[in-house]
Image (cartoon, rainbow, N blue to C red):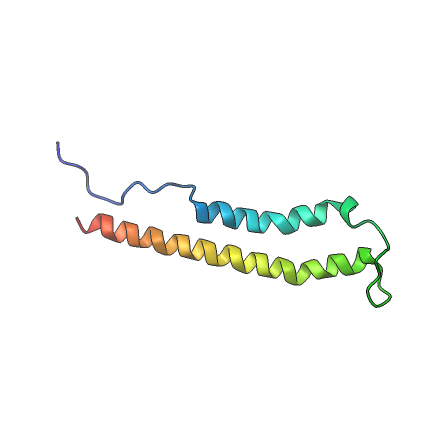
Amino acid sequence: MPEPEGPPNLPAVTPERVLAALALLVPIVAMLWVGSYDKLDPEAGGVPFFYWYQLLWVPVSAVFTVAAYLLINRDEKARRAARKAGGAR
């Protein structure tokens, strides 16, 4: 019986997608774990730790989001290449 043509079976879960999910999860967990930053000291420029820690996570979250985007983009390119190579048989 001939093998049906079409895209190859691609796994739904890849290491890139797992890492992207973790990169998006880290800032969420860090902000939901209030006990880790619910304190006044150390101060930075007179600003209590509670506030500057949360503000620090704004650019850190952006870095994690860009990393997740790049990982997903890399995974999608690999999937497109696998589909193209699978369809060219």
